Amino acid sequence: MSNHVRDKRKADSIELYSVLSSSGHFRYISSNCMQFLGYKQEELIGKDVRSFIHKEDIFLLESFFYNDHHLYPCAFRFRHKENHFVWLEASVDFIQNEIKENEREVIVKIKIIDTYNSSQTTKEIHHYFFNEQKSSSSQINTDEETNSIIESLPSPVFISYKGIIKYVNQSFRQLLGVFTREQVIGKSIYDYMLPDYHEVVQNRIQMLHEGQSIGVIEQEWRREDGSIINVECRPSTILFKGRKAEIAVLYDISSRKRVQKNLQKSRERYQKLIQNSIDTIGVIHNDKWVFINESGLKLFGVRDYAQIIGKNIYSHLERDSFQSIKKMLIDINAGKKEVLLIKPGWRRKTDGQTIYTEMVCIPTTYFGEPAVQVILRDLTERKNAENMMVQSEKLTIAGQLAAGIAHEIRNPLTAIKGFLQLMQSERKESDQYFDIVFSELNRIELILSELLMLAKPQEALFKQMNMSHVLTEVITLLETEANLNNVMIQKRFSEGPDFVHCDPNQLKQVFINLIKNAIEAMPSGGTITIETICENDTFTIHFVDTGEGIPEDILQKIGQPFVTTKESGNGLGLMMTFKIIENHKGTIQVESEEGKGTKFTISLPIAK
Image 1 (cartoon, rainbow, N blue to C red):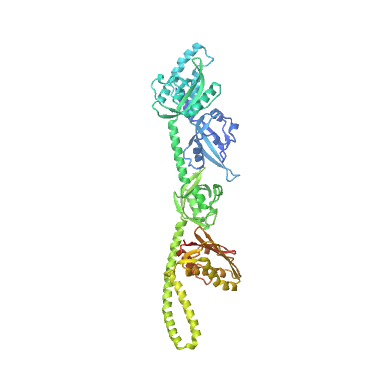
Image 2 (image 1 turned 90 degrees about the vertical axis):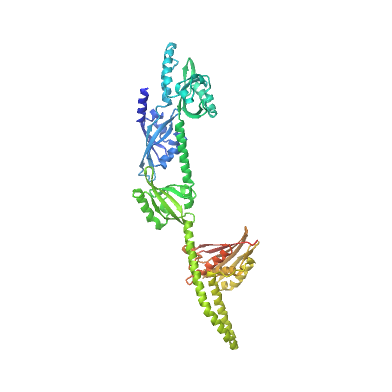
């Protein structure tokens, strides 16, 4: 058996070389592929390597080529031309294509790690066993010699007639967990083989007896104790005691299959973890995205991987984050930092919205070259919450300021009003002047009351109101002002339930604010369209103007105090509008485009 050991050692040093394109097609393979894989060079060149890989190993190999760190070689099964699988061990290197910048070639150094297998054992058995050319006397001598050799082989061997077992060696008995030949001889191989394989094996036995060559097949057998084992079976035909019989060598691959299954499950779990992570996980190589998970597609607002894989990362990055990202990539790729945490801003493709993120960066490799793996966490909602807190603080300050101003003005105003009333009783002839003064003082009191609402809203008087009537009253009030500014107001009121539980005076204030703002936004005249829709228990009102529009930077902050497009404005009117609609459990949305106009949409629950 020393020759077998020498053959095994020799196999460990066998190497083939191949070059694959970036798409996985053979561009070159060394000529000794014929000796070890059974193919001529021209039969492999141009073919996709994946068509020769065992189906259970394709994912492993793809992961190795495209995602893994290449610290260790990758072992996989390659289909021999004789239709059995040979175990290979591969390590890779890369050549960058100078002509085509984004294309590279993969150099694969391959070691044969399964040359001494069931195929080799079968050949040795054929060398010693009976054949049709030997005489009957030499058959007997060779039979004794062969029995001795086969009995001591480490590989399980059996001989059968049409599936009925006629001979087994000691390794076969150990494999099945039986003690004597008598426990096995005369039984059918199908007694030990799982039913799923019966039909396939019957067909293969038929093909053997018809003179066809068949390769290795993986099967599952049941041992005497009922446990299941995985085996590779390499069958052939021989003459046994003057009759054509089947001879098969089995190789126990149970441990290997368990390792493979565990590895496959581990990789699948890892892949599912990556793909289903709520955080974006990606790989950056040469300033381009070479991998990104499903969450990344949603984060950047793209429909499929083709819209982002291979694209420059700076195309989605906010300009003020360029320098921090560039420095991070340099430091990670140069090995200066193992882990970095930065907070860049990105631009979503679909709506142009800014996305605020927290990004963890760690070194990795891509095709053997330095790359950066990143984990992005979307902080946009947290950022918006922080902005809302800031806005809330502003509202509080504005309310306190308004309350203080209102109280300071109201005190002397009360005194002035009281003295004027005394003076009016003495001077009846000046009643018309006093009426004007009192009218203006009442107006000042109304303004002060509105200011006080910022700090402490007045008690609202809610009742069911017909919104079409409320809107009509406001339009009638402002129609004269609109005509003076060459603005036409169009009404498009829908039919249906338009009763809303509300404070009509507060909603009138909202409508007046929006219509007056629309008139002021059209200094050269234009059209205001007021449209109502009753749908899904919601009453919706659209205020659409054809004015100058609102700039993008102001649109993002609309409704905040002191944010306005007017030179003399303070933003408090719209802020109150938002607050009133919020108190009515409604929503308000703003859409605008500079030079085309603005659309305010108010949605209120219909009274039940």
